[in-house]
Image 1 (tube, rainbow, N blue to C red):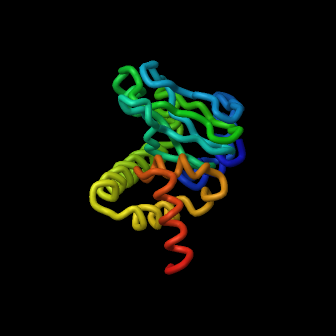
Image 2: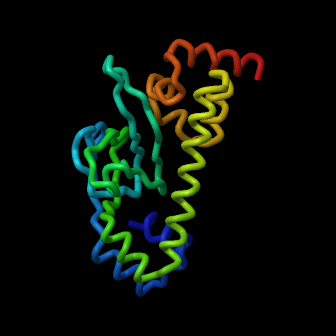
Length: 192
């Protein structure tokens, strides 16, 4: 749980005493590659912090085609906030891409962490605002940017994922076919 405890120290200046308390109540679990943490339609009661590994959130369209919403490598949170906060069936699937270790956090745990250290609550609001901005940027890119620009933005946001994520999954995130992604990568390698 080293990444998570370092995250808490950096995010909200948790003391060693507070960290020790968190270690005793937080749940950490290992999952194999391709394991579903959440399936569309299930009720989610948790947020996840990726300690090690790589996780994605996605949905399927009516034809069964996968549409990736987010990748969460180490030190990122992932959840279906609609389901967790509003107590509604999940609209997203959350699945490991690699063998992964995650910290499982309930709303109650997040509230407790805020009571334990009020700076944590402020930091979570800041992270939530950043996530909303990220989603707005994604929507704008999907609606108005070329495939090349979307790929370049993906590389900026996730520089360490190119070797960790299958090309078809990156293409799904970008809203293009794997063949189009191959053409974009080839064009960039030739022309920059």
